[in-house]
Image 1 (cartoon, rainbow, N blue to C red):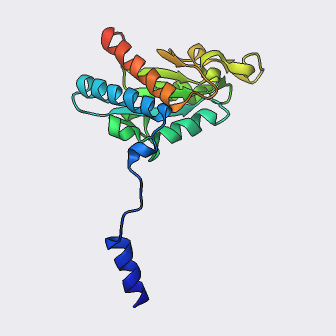
Image 2 (cartoon, helix red, strand yellow):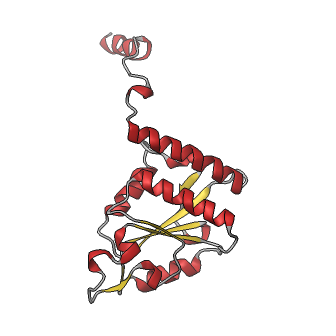
Image 3 (tube, rainbow, N blue to C red):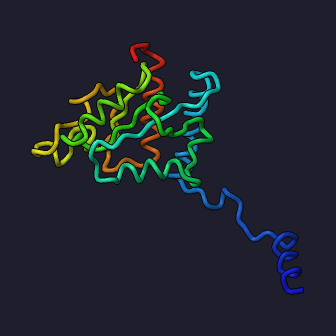
Length: 182
């Protein structure tokens, strides 16, 4: 009896949730605007197919990976804009490389780049990947990503926000469309 009443209240009772617009901040609205523009650009350039991204850790502090995980979760959900993460570099259109490249991971970064089909856009995500960060003169670090593989776009930040990451992807897509050098 109690369960029947509870189920009735859950399914047929009044809705107590707020509309989505009640929770949007200016930061979220900016993410939505950049995402919609990116989605339209991807749809136009890739003929309705999604842009596939492979993330590679070159030796980061994991802060950038947390942000990349965030843009794929239910809150930001980049799948709705036509972007998706893939497990294999053989399926990737774009590589995200995070962190300065350490000597232990140099071969892994090169192998991943060589396994990706070309043309492949390489994006350095975070200060470590762009400049080497605070580790640039360390004995264990080869250097920034561009010292190991060619980099097309750099997204600075420690770590960059999800909106900055989407802006960088949009910039990379536009640059790739403008110059057919990738």
